[in-house]
Length: 307
Image (cartoon, rainbow, N blue to C red; front, side, top):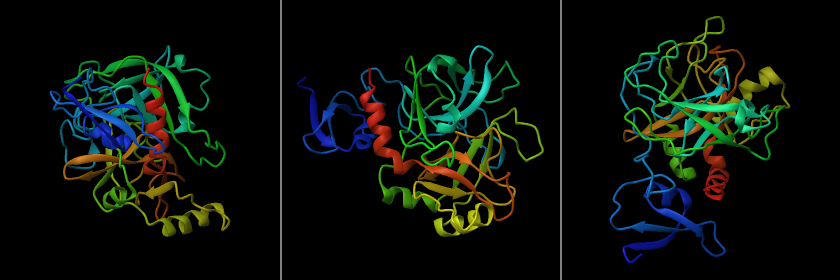
């Protein structure tokens, strides 16, 4: 329309600026991104009907480790198996239709029809909450084509829901780092993991979504630490990163959930919880899939499955 203007931009740039991606620009990985002048909102994939705006904004803030506040980590989702609502894994809302999770979480499911996504959940033991959850049927599972279920390399997947997720005070999308430079800035900031997993190796799973502040490890130090466990032949892929400290780690039940870092009060997802050796052991980090390494695959998957 006459009110639109279009330009070729990186896909995520288009999304975060509130544009509508229409097609790839000739001979580049950029997309033709169009903006309606009347639309001042930063929106999701489909700005005309998107209800999800301004990614990475928390719904509340507890400011401490332990139990999170209701609605605090607005992008954290639970992946459940139908019909009994069995908990499968965590995940994160990266678009109004798409959940980012670990491939090992959904690798065993032959069809998305067995899964549903619960958004806005806080206390799984309570039926009366300040912010009620919403549920959406899964309609598609997309594993990374190079996922190795033995080594857990490229442990990343996307799950599409059948209807667009509605934004609420406690439900929103997480931002994704667009460049290596942006990722590097975030690596030195304050980073958290969230999940309903065990607090320690011997404790029960948590009813309330918990949050843990985790330090990011240097790649070479992490590889050396893991070689003590797996042998000197072990090579840490550049598409993985490590985080955690003694008593501060993901644990059983946290898999697929996000590792997020803060930049100017906006949160970005740097990692997907993949695997670890025990939980919170001394000098033994947890291993995460590095989201920025897969940004092209994520945007191509989302962009090619708009319908």
